Each structure stands twice: as structure tokens, then as C-alpha cells.
Length: 274
Image 1: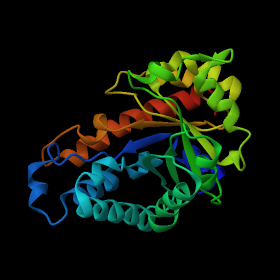
Image 2: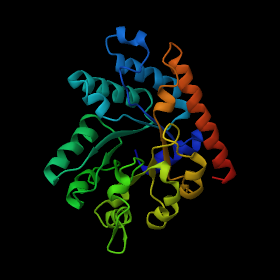
Image 3: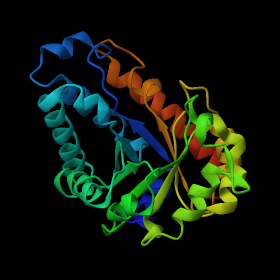
Image 4: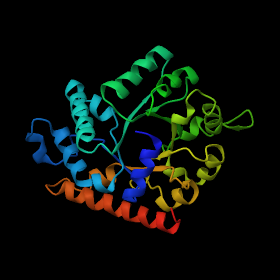
């Protein structure tokens, strides 16, 4: 999916919501455990209930890898279901990969060719040659970890180095890489005060923003500093939506929570005349 196609979908739905499909079998409704593939059945119900107010789904691959080959098969069935039934949806493999060139090429093939995701999250620590293999794929995006929402982010990401914070250096250097126009960046919502500085470096890039909702991030604060004329934001919510209920009404309750966020997003876009 091209960046423009994503922007068009956001404008049409008046939503820049990304739903994280982080499926934990200990948290899903009990009645689904009797099905052949509980993870897929859970995802399918969530997707069917929310696709019209959502522009993106983001499975965190750890929640599938933890269940071995069956979990990986559930992930493949989930992405196939989205691509076949809701091709306008933007898909993100939250895999946080990143390794030397040959290995990264194989990771990229796995997510972009075999599973056919639109994007994948990548750690930048090993530098250019660990990221450029992902950027080589046309109409695919690489979402680079920049400033994350976890407590340990301050261990390294905000350390001053060569006169600037490390995360700023990551942003600046990444813009020099081949096909850098295919980059997006992860920036945690719990660090909304940093968005103004980030926009000075990457004024037009899309930012994937976890941390709104269950982790305490504020949608209005993120939009105040991070929104662009082409939106430039994907706001992720996982637990707050998919685990809104663990009863038979789980999909309905998930839709209600997703709709609340979409309504707030539509209001923000209207206020900004976007």
C-alpha cells in the first residue's frame, strides 16, 4: 500500500486508528477455546466488528510465536483474511526485527512476500545495512523504533550523544538511507512532549504511536504536537479495544471502544480542517 492510499483511507473513514491484535489465550473469551483455532476466531471477530472505523491492524508477532507453529499459522490466516476481505486496511507486522544485511533480507521476505504485510517494525541499533534491505521493497514501509513508550526507553534513547539526544540522531541519520521515503517511526504516546522536536526532524513522516489508552497516553496531546496536513499519525490501541470484554459480547464491546476513538479522531480532524 502506498502512503497516499493510506492517507486516502484515513480521510474517508475520518480515522487514524490502528488496532493491535496481541492475542493472549488466557484473556480471550472462554467459549472460543473450544474452536479449532481460537486465536484466528478471536481476530476474525474483532476485525469484522471494527474494520469500518479502523485503518490498520498490528499483530505483535510475539503473541503468535509463543504458540509455535500453530500460532504462526493463526497469524498467516489472520493476515490472509484481512488482505482478502478488507484490502483497504493497512497491515503492520510488529516484529521489531533488525540484523546484518543478509538476515534482514530474509526477514523482509518473510513479512513482505510470504505473509504480505504492508509494513514491519524494525530496530535501528545495527544501523543502515540492517534496515535498507527492508526499504528495498516497493510500496512497503519500514517502521523504525525511534522513541518508545516503555519505562526503559530512557536508558538509551534520550541519552545525549554528539550534542543531541540519541533518538534524534537516529531520526536524522535514517533520512540519509536509500529509499528513506519508505520509513515511518514508532513514537510512544506517553512522551507527547517530544513530538514537537520530532516534527522538526521528520515533519511529514508517518508516526506509529502506541501507548494511548491503557498505557496512559493522551490522544489530544499527541495530535496537538504530531498531526500534519496529511495526518501523519497512526494511533495504536490494543488491550483497551480487544479486551473490552471477555464475554460473548467481546466483539461488540471492542467495536464500541474503537468507535469512541474514531469519533474523537473525527472531531480532531474537523477542528484542524483536515
